[in-house]
Length: 153
Image (cartoon, rainbow, N blue to C red; front, side, top):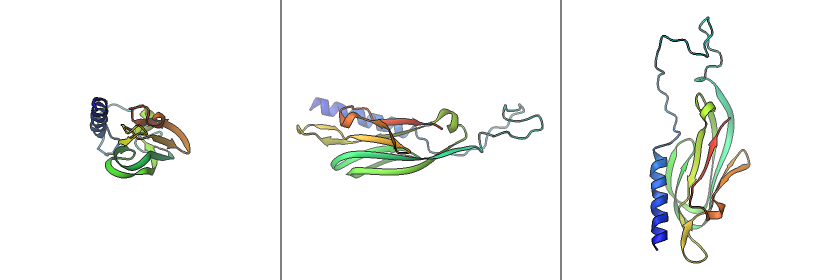
């Protein structure tokens, strides 16, 4: 029972931390300075300005296995926390832009607990696929870590 409580607390803590670390796009006006940026030519024309550059679109598939219902937290284009019926799949199209092209965007899914064959609670199995290729999993629920992947172009 103590192990289950510790696992639940760990998953909730991870969900709280990751909720504040989303990749939700917020467009703010860039700060004006008198210095020329490296992407600006001597005539003042932008050369592939990072703010207007977009990468290739990617199809990201989040999956959580098991049966029954579970709470999950997932982060793609924005953060989500919801009660779902398992098995669960969500597909998003993501296109990196600006600084995301250099640093990437963390996509993740934190699965809730499901009852294992021994009757004990364990993390539900999760996977993340990008453009048809599996890039993250939690070893069929054997790992208490969430499924996460840094999407880069």
